Amino acid sequence: MKRFLSLISLLIILALSVLVLNTGHSLAAFNQNDLMDDGVFDNSTSMSAAAIDSFLNQFPGSCISTNNSFSTPDPQGWSDAQNKYLFGSNVSGGQAVYDVAQLYHINPQVILATLQKEQSVVTGAKGCHYDKPNPQDSSQLYTCTIGNQSTTCTDACPFSYGGGCMNIAMSYGCPGSCKAADEGFSLQLTLGTWILRFSEQRAYGKLTGYAGYETGDENFVYSGPMTTGWRQRVTGGSSDYYDGTYTLADGTGVSIGSGATASLYTYTPFINGNKSFVNTFEGWFGSSVGELLRTSSDPTVYLVNGTVKYPIADINIYNDFSPLGLRIVDPSELPATTGHTVGRMVQGADGSSLYFVNAGIKLGFTSCAPGGDVEAYGYDCSPNSYIPLTIGQTNKLVNGPNVTRLFKSNADGTIYYMSKAYKRPFTTMDDIQGMHLNQGINVFTDAYVRSLPTWYPIFKPGSLVKYSSSPAIYEVSDSDNAFQIGSFAYPQEMGLGTSYRIISGGFTPGAILENKLLCSGNDYISTNGNTYQVTSGIMASYGWTSPQFLAADKICANIKISSTQLSQYIRTPDGTVYYVSGGLKQAFTSYNTYQSASYCNNSCTLISVSTLFASSIHSGGNL
Image 1: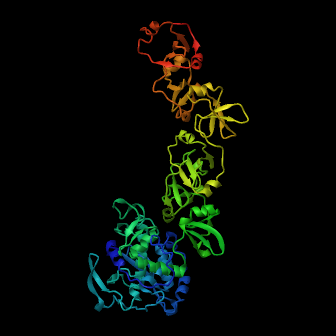
Image 2 (image 1 turned 45 degrees about the vertical axis):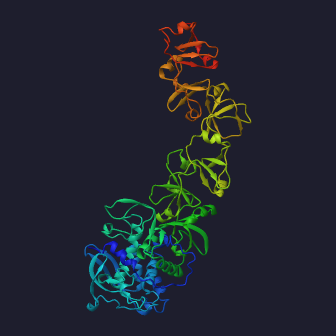
Image 3 (image 1 turned 60 degrees about the vertical axis):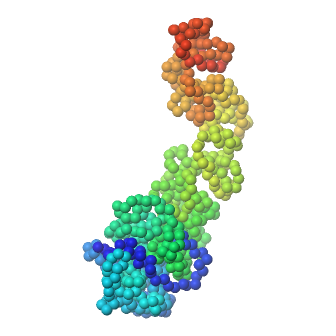
């Protein structure tokens, strides 16, 4: 097997790792839920090999500096063919750290801080003990049980030393008893870095395919902290939902803010140990958190994903993304490739979910369909319209509701409708209800709402409006269009009344609407404030044709639709009853005729209609 310990056993061992060094860096900003961002953790090119050696040489007592003539076999990764880790000829400590960082896609600064936290070998503050423990000395070997497995062990670094034991420099497989097969500086460097990367990725449920993956990793059962979401711990295992909470070995409850944070707690499940790590890292290299980057010489802030940096050009957008945190970096840490300017639309790390970001909250877009919410907010679904986020960046933004067309500012109560990146105010609650959107109302920052251009107010379908410059009356059909009407009589037929509002614009005039409506694919006629479905047979009886019925789905939602279909029998306000056939209405001259077997026979449906409706049908002879 590639490794002889189960991951459960390994986590027990790491839980007991030696904790040393406090640099004196202020812990006031220490956040136990967010020890490090993935962008920092994964920055494998933060330092070159030469820069690492130069850094180590700052410490006169460093156990792994070239000034003290240290060298070690060069880590070259796992070999499936040889079933072991391979190592090259001796190289400097800086080269070894750099090379293992590239193998596992880990920031070499994370490795340096871990070496210091575990055994103080970076500064040499606890001395440099090259043979404590010593797996080559048979007198130091004995059989012990690590986890639930019997193996050959040595004693851990003597307590009196307090660190500096080079053969267990990363405390992998230690302390208490140390697995002899895992001892040696370069092997410790390799194994410790592997578990850091493995744990970060498994905390997201990733099993294969990531940089640093080694054959068989997917078969190890991971029992460490998980980030929020549906995750799988091992190949063939169940996919379960995790809420991101985790209880450490010292009893402290934490919320896992990133894969990097999960990895650090996997390695050392104690608050104090991770305070030591963060304290060390930040004292040497700057902030351990911050997905928004800038240099000390340039105020431009970038959101970085992989090899692309995306500039932020608006202070309000910067505020919207502020939960990602700002970090000051060396110019060399910024990618050379500059992408498009950051807007409020982003793509989640799953590569498919699209979100609108405001006030640190991500609101999901549910569809890219033409005329949908994405388009309403002024975006499209092409890559140039959104910024792709990493998993860590996605998780730092709070989950909000889905995007809706309705929204308001957090500073006042005006409710708006979003249309083509314009805000359109509602003037009454009746208009809001009459839109039948069945959506919640998003609350955005006042800065964002004020930044939106304002268009004309929006009125519910069926509303009557009139331009101040024209006598024409229009009936609103949807958010952008309105039918022309030739007479107030037709809205009255629909039960809409004659009240109208004067507007200065906002609607595109459409066809002339009377009282014939097409609703959800069915034909309807309105009269006397009621609307009746017209079947194909009745259509022929009245002499109408389908093109006379205009599509008005949204108006139909705001008028009274009768459960009764239109029939051939109608009654006018003066009490006259008519039979309609062949496009003609024929009046019954007596009640007996109306009830005769050849006509109603007590089973017809009689529809009360307006005089206007009756007059629109040609008259035939009396019955």
